Length: 75
Image (cartoon, rainbow, N blue to C red; front, side, top):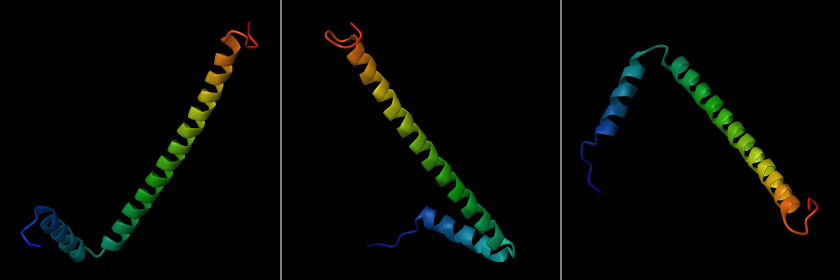
């Protein structure tokens, strides 16, 4: 494995050095971590809601399909 000057690693090192000089860095990182956790929770809730809606729409679709098929309850 070669160890070249990867720009992403160099940028990360620069950010860590800048944060290391900031006495409020711990608080800022904690705030970003909390925001990321809340976003992840919100996205999981959204995904769950969309999944529930999809299931409900599939049930409605099957119910309507059965109603209008020949020999079904609707005709």
